[in-house]
Length: 577
DNA sequence: TGAAGCACGC
Image (cartoon, rainbow, N blue to C red; front, side, top):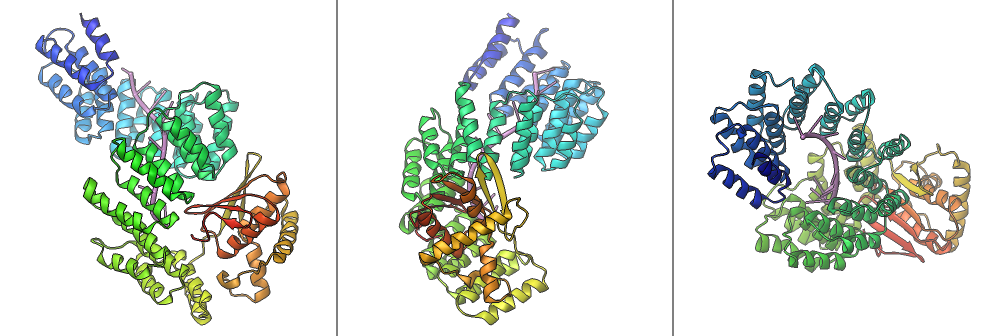
């Protein structure tokens, strides 16, 4: 009978069924008496945790203690897992104390569960102490420690543990790759992924989700496609995690239509999948489609959360859909009882300000129920720059500088506004202030993938092996686009230099270096894909439009916030960004 | 028995 029930519990795949089994066991008096009592409690605790209901596990553990039976090492490892998931620090600490009293804390499984529990709920030093003192260790102990460091963003320590492991397994590799991917160190994540394969490990779904995130971050389309192909050729089931990661990768690598295809083929979509698709379309300026998907999501019964609303509002911003933005913003509370957060106000201010409704944007900022943060003022100020409104920009700057006194962005934006409206003395003053406060500009950086290898260019970069050819190519490009009407736009050059030098500085923007390199290194007619860390500057935007025409190339540029597709001399952003 | 994965804002 015991084994019958245990099989039932083990195979149980839904909560309702599990509760029914528990009721039968209780009614039959099997839970609180007899030799199988501890065993049944353990199985139920484990099953509830596995079915994502760890809160139902806690009372079972208390019942076990009250009944007078002594929990065994299984009980402790299962309840600690539940406590890690909730997370329930107090119960976990009590379990730790009891395990210590019973001498079970040195058991390998219990100790590993304790390492995990402490790393999730407490101080990482506690987890480390348990790891260092453990009587015996296996790969799980090491893996738990790696992920503990990854969780707090301490990649150096995670890597040390990884390097010290006597034998690594797929999970060790997945954990360290996830760490680099989450920390934005995408290049190292991809490098480790190749090393993992060289050492003969087969990646699993969870590994590939992290790899795809790294590809998305870097704009490494070829490598991302390789992962997709790998999944297909292995007949792997694309679950909601992998599907979402693929959609995100395709969208962030400039191929949002391939993302749509993955999305349509997904048998099951959760809120994250919908949100990723909405945001992906929005980034490409396809606001109408994004909002259609948003409505479809609502119709399918998935309830949007505040992040989904950010996606929908961003889509309105990139497509200039002011009225729809207002409707969606209002529906947050009216339809779902969600109070807009400061981020949603930020989106609305962005939407209004970019569309020239600066006064309306200012009214919204002034009437917000919470203090506007730097992103709200930043959005407002970007709108002021776009529409060259110096007075309102200065108003924004006063607030922005208080909130972010050391951010270079504010100063750069302000100096650009002054320069572009002819107030050169003021622009100079801002530059002087930056120098005095030792605020450094974030250097512009552009990535370009050529045949699966990602090359990086910084502004004024001369470190690339082919830099001579690249600069020569730029001279040729500039000659050809000047014939089409290109005039270097010196207004946005911040450096305190003469006019000729300004042109020189412009021509060394990382985006131009990357395009010149791509033109040398890729086949005629191949699409060029760039990823930038900042927003595209006006001069690069003008130049790129003409390059797409003269060289008959499609150029896809992902900047800090959205995509630009340059083709035949124009851009999908309609000069609006 | 245990350990690893996805969306937003800058």
